[in-house]
Structures are given as structure tokens and as C-alpha cells.
Length: 429
Image 1 (cartoon, one colour):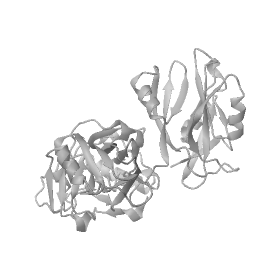
Image 2 (cartoon, helix red, strand yellow):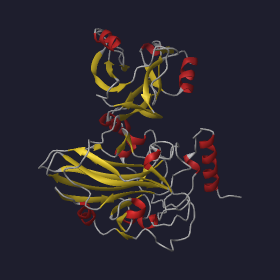
Image 3 (tube, one colour):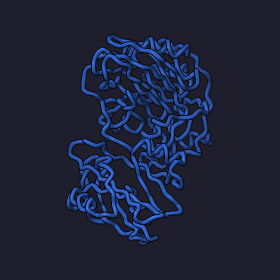
Image 4 (cartoon, one colour):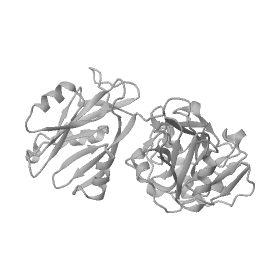
């Protein structure tokens, strides 16, 4: 009989084949494997200090100060001799496991170290509703000579290829002044966004051990480009983490001397944010938000009574071309209950602004509008809006991309609103 972890792997492969990616995170257990015998990626050296790691990254036009590392000391180090396989010869490596274990040739589909350490709140927002684990984070301040800053990196993971499309969406981010510039096509770089099926031209499959790297797949060298303020410190945070559990190693390789200013190319900004759903049991109300500060307060209890439902969906950031601004309104007219209302339709927004029961807050994010027949543009999926019809003496709407959730709410007496069966907008996949 196959070990449990291998059975999960086989199940995941079958899930991909039948386009069903439900995997039970609680059933995965760390695999056993023999120690490394023949390092092949040149050499990998372990952690010495955050200052030395940051110094290795310092390139032309920048000064780096105030470096610090968060994570297990075995999860950070340096590498060399990797030009042929990675496209980056020398640099810094951060891993969710032991950095020495990234050395090939690939001898296992399940190389893994679980440090049982926390993830990172900023990364959690990128993979919501899942949470991250075993984060390795290098931070420092950069004083650049010009108004652009960048660095080159490679993302690699053992989650390839079996868990692509699942909740085990290991992720990397490079935050510059709080904004992630490790994006491809507006999506954060992760197992689910760069793989053989998605952005495949940027992906290298290593399950057959053709390359001198332990991890089963990795990206071509990618560039992070950020707009910065020259002549003053700008904060950089490089973070990589496991998602949904702490096993199956993932790593990021950052080129030596690669933090430079100026950096060629347009800023690699994200066009996506994540709207997270919450539920208030006493109110029997649902609420969504993509505002990081609100998410923190909802999670830590500052806004009492709200808990995550485990549902979330992508939205476009404000200003995204060919999308509509979403107006958000707030009402206290139904105290002690309160309610929020969202609409991507300009006429509906204008009408609600005239209603004294509702206070306009802001245009908080963007969505694409559905076509007249209820279909959505490519790269988007329908978002359903359901109204509680004033049940409980206060209005409330629920917004979901899950058609089963939509059907369940309708069965409870909630009313569909929008085009066709209740499609209010189209949101990015």
C-alpha cells in the first residue's frame, strides 16, 4: 500500500485530470526521505546574518540598511554555480524548508521540512481564504538613486505539478513600501499562477530531474520592478511561504547584486486584490472587504462578532482599465444592526447616493460588468448577488462566486439580483 502522503499525491493527480481540485489539507503528512548525498546546484551555504544576505543583493544605484530575517535559520542562505539551471548564477535563497535541500538532482517528488512556524499576514491576503505557514522573510531598507527599483528572482516548489489548482498554493512576494511587485500578468507569483497550464512559457517542469534542482518545478528568471522615492529609504520585504500546511518545500532565489536602481521595464503592479467574506451570527449578516486594515481588525476582534466564512474571491484594484468602480455604502438606519451595500453599476450608485438611509463611503475596488446575456469576459467568472429581502428587520446582501452557495441562499428565501440568474458582476479568476 502507498503511504498516506503518496495516496494524497495520486488523488491530486486524478483531481487535475477531472478538473476537480479539492484536497483535504488536514490529511497531508510530512513524507520521510533520505538525506542529500550529491549536491549538484554548485553550492548552497547556510544562514550567517541578515546583513550579509542583504549585502550580497546590493547592486548599482542603491544603499541597503537595517536588514533583518524572520524564520528558521536553516531557511535562508546563499547559492552559487546555478546559471545553467536557474538562469541566475549566484545569490540569496529563502526556503520554507532547509535551504541545503534545494540542491539536486531531483530525487523525490515530496521533499519537505515542516518547521511548524507561522506564515505571514501580508502573504495570507494574497492566498485568502487559505493561510500561510513556515514563512521565510528578509527585510531591509533601500535608498535608491532613481525612481525605480527592481530585482531578479526565480520561484520554485515541490507542490508542482500534483497540487496545481489546489489550496496548497505556495506563494512568494516582494513588497516594496507595502506593494507586491512579484507579479505576472497582474497575479501574484504562486504555484497556481505560474505552472504548465497558466503562464506556461515562464515555467520549467523538473519532475523528470532534467535540471540540477530538487524542486519539481520553477519559473524562468522574473523581474520585480517598483516605483520608489529616490534619495530616501524605501522598505523591501521578500517573503516566501507554504500555503494551507507547512509541508512540501518552496523557495525563492534572488540574484546577487540584483537590487538595483534604475530597473528597466514598467512597474510589475498587481491588478488584483482579494475580497474576504465574514459572517456575523447575531445579525445573520454577511460582509466582504478587500481593505487590509479592515481585514486585520475583523480578524483580531476589533470589529466584534465577525468571523471568516472561508470564502473569498478576486477583485480588480481601482483604476484597472475596462472595469467598473464598485461603490460601497454603509447604513446605521437599521440599528442595532448595520449593513453595507456594494454596486458596480453607476446608475444604481447614483440612486443609492440620494437615499438618506445610506452613506456613500468610497469606490473600493473594481469589477468587470457582465454582458447582457449574463456571460462574463474571458479571464473572469460570475459574481452573484443575493438579497435577504429585509429578513431580520435589516437589509443584507451576500456576494459569492460559488453557485452552490448562491443556490443555498435562494432556497433560504434570499432574492437573486442582477443579470440573468443574479449575476451582479464578473471578477478575475
